Amino acid sequence: MARLTVGCLLTAGLVGAGPALAESPAPASPATVVPVQTTGPADKRFNLVVMGDGYTAEEMPAFRADVEKHLSVLWSIEPFASYRSYINVWAVEVPSPESGVDCDPGLDAPLRDTALGMGFWGGCNPNSVQRLLTVDSRLAGALADLVPGTSGANRQILALANSDTYGGAGGSYATASGGNALSSLITPHEIGHSLGGLQDEYDYYARGVAGGAYTGPEPSSAHHTLLTEERMREQRAKWWRWLGERSEAGGVIGRFEGGLYSTKGVWRPSKHSIMKTLGYAFDQVEREVMVRAISAKVNLVQGHTPNSAPIGADRTVWVDTLHPLGGELDVTWRLDGRTIGAGNARTIDLRAVSLSPGAHTLTATVSDPTPFVRDPAVRGSAALTRTVSWTVNRALTTPEDEIEAAFTGHTPTASPVGAQTVVHADTTHPTRRTLAVRWRLDGRTVDNPGNDRDLDLRALRLTPGTHTLTARIPGTEAELRWTVDARPATTSYELSEPLRTVNRPGSPVEYVYDGEFTMRLTGRDDQQGAAVSQFRVDGDGWYTYYGWPTDAGAPFRFSPSGTVIDDLVYGKLGRSRAVPWDDATPDYGTHTVEYRTIDAAGNVGAAKSFLVTLVEPRH
View: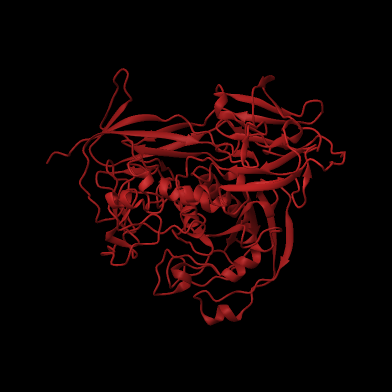
């Protein structure tokens, strides 16, 4: 990857630190801008700018590994999986003179001389909490400004601290510790705050201390309410459109008490989601908010026939759109308000349209039909709907052009594409002809009527294995070639020794335990890139496997009542438990554990399962 090195003189800022640190400027450090993922020009994309603090020059490989891990998990979570193609990722590498960050893990820990002044305890504030990891926003902004084409309007800053301590923060910028077992799950949670304005669904603020009753007015938060389900439906308020749906985070979208740091008096949509419990997905309510937030950072229309002056009726008219990985955008053409049957094409030929003398109004409306959005106000907003207009006059003549047929933008070809994604290929736009794109899979022509700039691979139902996809402009030598990875990653599991193992024909293998047991998941793929494994119990929400909170290399531990770590509860078998005051009653009996892996190309492996029977100890 190309690297841009810029001399950057950074001065340490005061972030809860003592005067000694504020008085001493940091030494000059070269900042290197590394394009990690490029989907288009920076000024036309949403840019995620990732920077590290407390990584010395010798520790830069560790920073790069942390970035890869965090991104792998981010791309496995919706809506980032479907809208990854809207996002450029940049890493800004700036070595710190010292390793680590301030007040890690405690207030009595030494201060560190680092590039971004990151620190736990809200920047070493004794009145804060340990997990609040802050960054000097002035220094972070200065580093982000080194990425050409980005600004506060089209980017999100993520600062990673060189630490294994659990922590992060969301606000103007997002922060997370780089190396904690749960750190890659902190990142999407904090981006949910920073980008989407989502609120915490915790029913506590200080760990181990129940939050008490909420006494405020109806929250402005999209995913908190005082309303009953009946009132939500009557008033068509909050998440009424999603009520009764199976939650992406497990269970059913409904009304669950607790959130905004209060245990009672306020309700959230799901029992658990990533804004309450790291490891689960955004539920539908949060996902809709995030789709709008991501899409608002870009323009669905990336280019179009110039419209600053009237155009003739003797030419083609075109729009170039963005290309979500999760599905095609719609383009609707209208002439004087009447729909033209253009089959979702990106180009129309006005010579084939019957026009009376005089001026006419032609419009192209680009919209995102994603099922992730149900609110008409969101769907009709500029984030998900854009319209371009032209004045067409038959009296005007369009000059001949010498535009050659060529591809202008496309899905990257350097790495495999997944069998569950949309691949795209945009072309130049001659004024007197419409260029076509012809697709072939393993040498055979693929029928793709209507919008031929996008090919939805899901509709092809590819057989497992590796395939070759090509796109060609007929009559030219212009051709693009991709490797299609249609072989999902595999997952294996390893359990601690059971009391006994039961094998029944036609049923998953059953393991019997009388207490806690451990499970290690290992995902393997035949292509490069990190794979993310997940599991779920008794059909609950899929939960990202990360090892164990205190050790990413240790297996996950299940127990009858869960294990309390830093006043949070992990691994209760059966009904989940997040905090010590949740119901700890053991769920004895048989439980189904499913597991799967999502590979780097976005393929989601088929779920497999085993049974675990937890027997009640005899006294």
